[in-house]
Length: 110
Image (cartoon, rainbow, N blue to C red; front, side, top):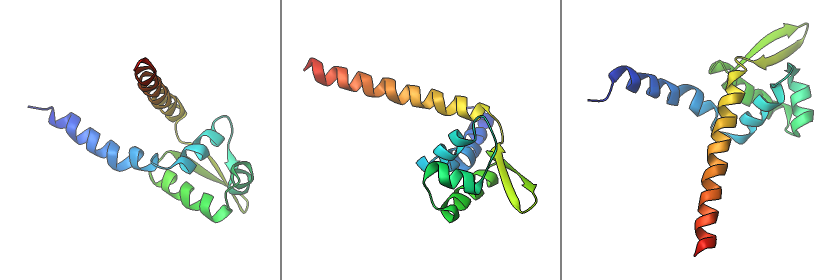
């Protein structure tokens, strides 16, 4: 029998963080916030994405607690909720790159 606690934790992970990470723009926003907090305008300029679109993505990330927001007068300043999320994404990127490398090596060997 599969561990019911693990099953529940994985279901929650899938509903939460995994769903939020299922968009390249949201991943880019997280990388843009790695190192320093930024406003919506800064993120929009940096990523070349319209501000309303950035705001929508930030709302998803905030809802999933991947980013935090602080007010600075009229401006909302966003920061990573937990810097380990970048490490986790980097590991997933490495796994994907390694898998692609293996597939290419198999094709070349044929």
